[in-house]
Image (cartoon, rainbow, N blue to C red; front, side, top):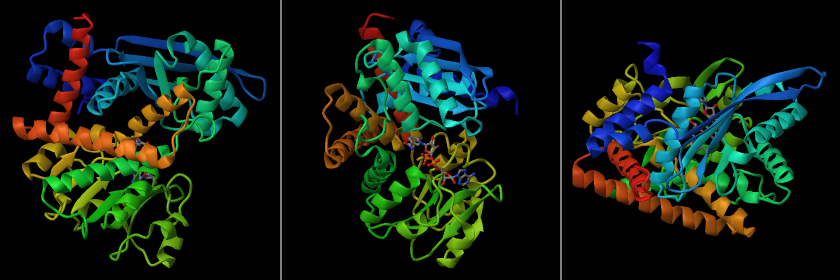
Amino acid sequence: MSNESYNPFAIAQTQFDKVAEMLDLDQATRDLLRNPLREYHFSIPVALDDGEIKIFKGYRIQHNDARGPAKGGLRFHPEETADTVRALSMWMSWKTAVADLPLGGAQGGVICDPHNLSDSEQERLCRGWVRQVFNFIGPEIDIPDPDLMTNPKHMLWMLDEYEVLAGKKAPGSFAGKPVGMGGSMGRAEATGYGVVINIHEALKELNLSPANTTASIQGFGNVSQFAIELFNQMGGTVISVSSWNQTDNDSYTFRKESGVQLDELRSVTDSFGGINKEKAIDLGYEVLTGDAWIEQEVDILIPAAIGNQINKDNVGRISDRVKIIAEGANGPTTPEADTVINERNIFVIPDFLANAGGVTSSYFEQVQSNMNYYWEKEEVLSKLDVKLRSAFISISDFAKDNNLTMRDAAFVISIDRVAKACHDRGWV
Ligand code: NAD
């Protein structure tokens, strides 16, 4: 396979071209939407603790803001590239549109490995990033969020620098802040709960009762743990989860036929979602190979770890019992595997719908921060429920009416919404 096929931006553009054809978009709209509107590439000088100055490469890329202020994550990653940021910015435009949020899409990044930076170096890097893009972000322009290897603490440093430069408070300029410092209640639960809200709707569609359904999940981090919590409340049982083991540099699947017990498994899991193998065995878990999660005899599979995990090499191992795949992770299924899954009539809830609870709760945080008035957790979660169910229903109705997969229906609806906003504004 050529390098080109692994380039996320080339993949995002190919996906877009396919849907542009289905929607019969005019050439100007295609030219506008297959590339970002604006890109900022910059150098960030940071004084290291030993006095050396190191220059980091930073990005903020705004794919589209026709539907509202741009929004999207900000990653710290050693392998960050301009094309990764471009692709993620485009996918954010479709994700905010699929959830029908009044927002556009953006993404940012810094090429760095925060593991090798002290806290004060990370703080200076965060402040330096803001100084480079201060004029191009803000509550009415573009609101960054945490993403890979960035966290609420980073967002708070960035907010603080933004407010120093602005000479005023602007809590709505960043999302994913710590609760009590402008963060929203329910943000931690939102993505995992959102995956299960989507599963609940899919089960209704398939005329299946949630009680007594079983699931197997890849990953045991934020998304997976809260998905398990709500799935259990719905009456279902998760029989296996998998996780990455840092010491062995390998992954394992942990299975308990009677059901994974969330609290006991959390008690032997580190803050990165890594389960301690020996302690899990003591708790009565069977330890299987890392990819065994995919071949369990369950009704539902939930990939909630990393990308490209369901691929042509393992798709054939999915049991005939599986009726639903809910993509909690971003990009867990390769296009080849997707074709096989569609031929087998497994109901797929595509990533940008299944995990849209994260961006939806982040939007709720912006709203609360702009008002400087914070809702109770129940209010956040009930608004989340309404928003996600309505997104699911509009996509599944469209899929049925037009004989499309859920993934194609979600792409068509979201790209059509963004294209219409560009037309209505008179851009194209
Ligand atoms: P996390 O870092 O909290 O947890 C990741 C989990 O995956 C950990 O348990 C880790 O051990 C496991 N893992 C990593 N590599 C693995 C492998 N090769 N095999 C098995 N397990 C492996 O991450 P998270 O926040 O739960 O996010 C999970 C996925 O969901 C990511 O793809 C992320 O982009 C996506 N997502 C997250 C959010 C959010 O709000 N957290 C929102 C949208 C999408």
